[in-house]
Image (cartoon, helix red, strand yellow):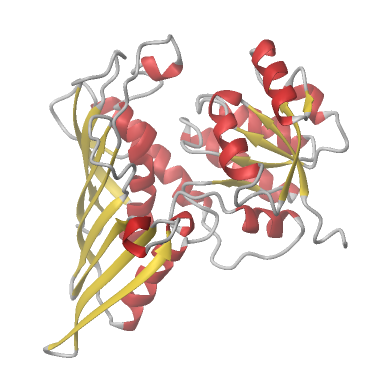
Length: 353
């Protein structure tokens, strides 16, 4: 096997969320073809030891010890967002690549600085939202937009939900300063990144949120409105209060000047298969009055929010990615979150700084 085809040797930091990544993505999931898990690390040494035995991998005592290990090519960084840019800086400065998760960071300036440094050093930093290149569903919307000359976006609505039974545990998710408008910060970030790709630069936001069932001091039901520079208006719903059997649907409806696209989940039962599908439907005008309707089906793990391990492997091994996401889009989502933090206890809207 050539070096180009070899799996990337990766050590993962942060087992609170990272254990989900290992079990659903790396052991026998979509990342297993591209990633070899060679170690783990967590601030809770006992937890790290337990999971090290479970996964039969090396347990590192600290991030610094990972960075000194020549065998490790990349780090999976799954720590809380605050201060993540500093950790990313230390990783890329040590010559390692990074796969991380949303939210990327809570400081726009720090985020932009580390992204620019990574590019200068030739190191890869990827995250799941926004994904490094447009996902299959977003790319299909772009294709329809251009093919049928749909015009600019006019309005959009995005929603996702699940039913959580959470209790306060003293973590960052209990702190409104670190986890503002929790359902949007934790789940709605996917919608923010979808809409930033589809609708352009954000200008103004307004949020409403409430606590219905949660045992945490932060909210569990929320909606955010975004006005974009081009005049498009949108809304994002995130909730930890709904259980209709369709967890994390990530539904989307976006209206352009001359057409509408909807995205929704069709469960595996509908297809008689084990994998859920996403259905994208276009309704548009072709010419003056000819109506067009098109529908495509996409595997759920190929839509926005998924970890693109194939593109991570390609980039780390020196391949060029087409239509790679810009640092500006990543930072724009952080700017939206910062405005949301300012607005969470206000009755007025917040302008994007």
